[in-house]
Image (cartoon, rainbow, N blue to C red; front, side):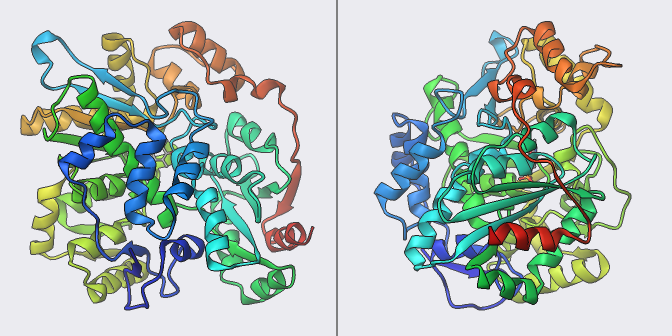
Length: 502
Ligand SMILES: *Cc1c(COP(=O)(O)O)cnc(C)c1O
């Protein structure tokens, strides 16, 4: 299987190269030349496998330049630290006995070492990169550069810590992340990690990182220390491919628990930001997983809902900070891959959409393309109030505790079912532990958080719901602070060079 760019004709490359490079030199994203298929018999075989085996089986279809043994080891080690035997367990919510034909299976993607769904991909990406270095004969050290508004930074640190031939530096806005998020990052252990606060906001940190990536002088300087820059964000194919796995895994878990039979159709709902997670569901559908509709759930920043409804992508609008911060995004980068596939690989059109987006902040797709998307996607959004109500309703009705992002998905599921009367079983992506967003969750449940410190809120939520705090969060209050570095927003390059050289 070879990889090509969404924006111009390039010499096809192996997956190892695509993973190391991250982004194509023409600014496009790497896509597989064709989408591999799984037959129903192959899907059936997944039933008796554990999660790591399932992952190796799916990844083998895309990463054909990796051996079976390599993928077996990678998937085994990547999910070793997950705090659930099933790695991605499925909680089934069924209203009543009469309604058993329309269960909602909530796939809990947050049992990894940082309690965020990013772990599923970021626990394996460093291992794939490490092998890619060997395969391509690259002798330089890879330096991963991250700007974070909270969650991605910690998940990337946890993934890359002590991975040979790699280093990672994470910049976060000083005072711009929650106390828990900061503690998660500054207590990170590992010989190859650096965490630095930036005197500025998230945009300053992100701009600083982008500038470093595009600065030839810095690249040359780094080359002298035998270091090459790379990125771990969600446009990397090595982050996307591992996300396809859990749609297959959850589908066969639905079979295992007698909710569906092999071949039955389901719908999938995904709380969406950068369009990575839902794109993985799209790949799963294209590969032959019986998914009927992909439900794209957004928050108050519903640029994607408007896109699917009108065919116009327009980022020129107010930006809102919501209780679902991981979805506060106005440019959903991975949409480019969908446009590529659904235009039949029309690079000229994709390039012109992206050019318009870059220059005017918007683009419009034509009617035939919109009709194609209509057949696959349904899009809607949840308001802040609806999100909070859903947390309370799900808790009151099922005794099941969800975070705000998961609530967006379940709120939109209700809207979808109400509007279309389509009551097929649903697989819903649950993207964060409720303990990562304690203040919003407690408030939604009707508890006041006034004057209660972030760490105390963990205990409060645990006491009130009788649910266990994930161990990585429970131990934060005693963890040693290892990173107190801080720099000005114009000093980030200097910090990178200093870290690369030591
Ligand atoms: C990253 C993230 C999302 C959005 O996922 P995308 O792949 O960017 O669409 C949703 N919820 C949580 C908790 C996240 O961390």
